[in-house]
Length: 567
Image (cartoon, rainbow, N blue to C red; front, side, top):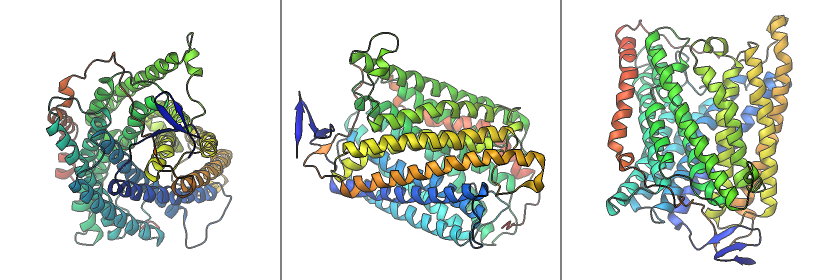
């Protein structure tokens, strides 16, 4: 293998930094299993999304055995629930393994395999029932629409499986803390534990909803269901789910990218503070998704609107910290003047470029979220394509582009293959295609939503109504964006296959990039490591925000709803 030496840094012929570190086979197989399942899920979910957009634009007619709402359900479940959970668990597992000694304890590996098979079996059950048109209830599975009971069992297995691998990671972290008393946790491991705490807290609510309320109703053990209660428990989980997607992207931005760009982490405290604030403010905010729903007191809706706005604070801290890291890196490479440092960033490195484009798209996506949360403005955009556009500029752009960037080095690290210059150029092209496609799809959805175009509706001319006709041109542009995105996902699949099976094998391993903290940064305050304090505060905020609304929904409930099958 052709290597070149630059000082103490060894690189391969394609410019990739090489190291002697490699994961043990047992850990590597676990991560590859989770990543492989995630890759299949994202491809199948993208196929469903493509067909769905083609139908809504009136470009195709679906066969009688396949409906728009089946595709919509499949798209949401495969991408928002399955792809994310599998990929995130692999990424968190990898970083904790790397920063806490290089290998996981046996108990963590055993729990991870149990988790994988639970999650995989649960996913296959749910997907099968969607494809047989027995679970066309969309990814939010709102009652009183009712799927086959086994669909909910499948989703429960997916969630509980994620808890099991999370517990395994916590065990590894606890053992490290016990051996290293008084030392601050490695930043990646710290942020991973914060992400897991958020996930366990939030997903407990939806698990209670599914297991205690929905599954007995779906199997006809009880005749009726409290619709408002199940929706409220879903959104207790649903908005925190967004941050479960976003926090691993933040980890990459904070911890991995500084090493990729040749810089240092600006601060060792601000990232930790950011994640603590997100633990506190990501859960007690779900009612801002229910501002238009009856049965919930307006005071608690307003309270949760205020708490939602508080999430802007850690977001702005992140923006400041990341830009500071970029500027310090650029100036260390000779960048002069006010913005000369920008030119010094590695724009031709897809591992940076893809994530940076995700950051840019997060700006309009986040701004749209402030509008969604505003009590009055929500009345205009609620249940329109604006909301779907917001979802695609945040999750499908910022998060997914960052996950793509992670895969460009994580897969080669696991397979001991190289990330060739050809693959890098294709990854740059893929990023450009994804960005353009998402601007046309997600961006134009915002404008269509302002015109009143509803979300979650199949192709219709609305009886040739003049307002409905004005939406048609937007549909065509959105469909063009969907075509570009589908081409981009095919290219992404080609890159992944190459990184898994085709690109040259290496004697050494590509670098797993973990950033070094700026030597001028202060030690993080020890209070930030007191997890019991922050978990307690998080629970207290949720109790304040949710106890009375949930109590009122239980005590003042109507007789409940019989099941509906709307398809």
